[in-house]
Length: 73
Image: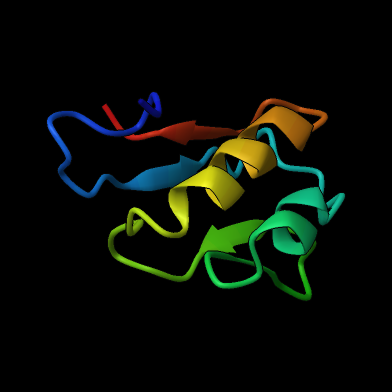
């Protein structure tokens, strides 16, 4: 079971913009979910993460050098 899933429900993922340094590792891991803007800040481009995209988001969370990405509480 993935950390971001509770009872099979889709979850939201968030980026702490104050911590993000625009390394683009999240965008490389899950381009369907993250986009780094011209300001070098990553943003989530979906409202909810589907079950199919969750493993990519988990990878993005692990790869973030600043630990700026997390499942929403």
